[in-house]
Length: 339
Image 1: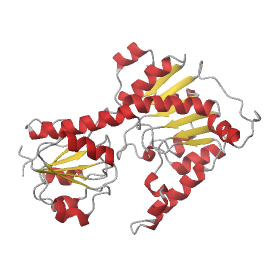
Image 2 (image 1 turned 180 degrees about the horizontal axis):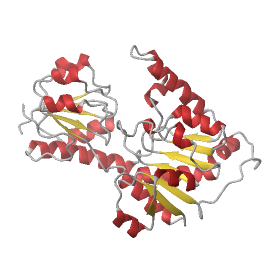
Image 3 (image 1 turned 180 degrees about the vertical axis):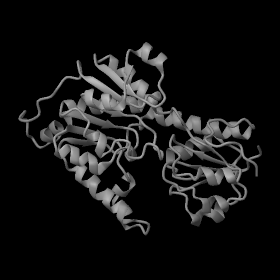
Image 4 (image 1 turned 45 degrees about the vertical axis):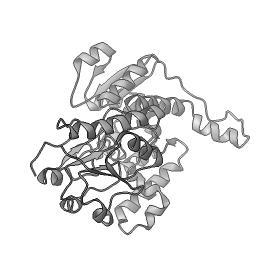
């Protein structure tokens, strides 16, 4: 596939320098901001457009990209891309899977340990010159029952790491892998059994219409009293309002969240954007409530953010573009289409 010009959005200096080194001979356009309609005149002759998490590749934008043959998404999730509109226009869409499996799995284990030992509270106390142990008696991870929701690559990696801590593991997944269960020493069970029987539940689900609020008011009430919830997947799979209610009732002892619903709205300037809606404002208020609860530990979507994962992400993203140029596209989330 002949490619002359490529546009990159949500592009920081590190990403820019990487692609400048590896795409010599191509006309490259770099934008730090998200893709929007105002950029269309500058990119209408691009054969490849690279976006990451937040650039909205809408039907309207797609319809005004006459030369584009590939939307290359530089992360795993691609729910910001109108895949159907791309298919109708014969535009391929690729994503960047697998680059952060180890990083996210390790972060999930980190959050479990921090929550069990109240490390986030103890750290703040120490910085305030308060060395009291009052109210922060911890618990061991060893001997606990861990429930894993979703046994994709990251879920399985968490299981692999957690086995070293001496935990019992149950898992729920719509796509069970009996061979992995036998090899790693865990068992599959119905969702209700996993929630009711686990001391810690860790979510590892992708975000789509079938997983929206997968953990909701109804099944949060099934959790074992005094258990912990970990979410390093996507904010949308967990109903924030229902989570707060469960914490207030004492069913959950605590939660550790690396992701939030509408987490972009937590950036203060987002509240001033013209597309802010009452629904987004409600999510902002719920997130602020969670941020100020002492039994809730929140990190700013950094599960994937390690030096090793960043380099792997760049390499896979580059490979997707080069394989497309060679006529053998990989990591596609759409069919080839015709244009």
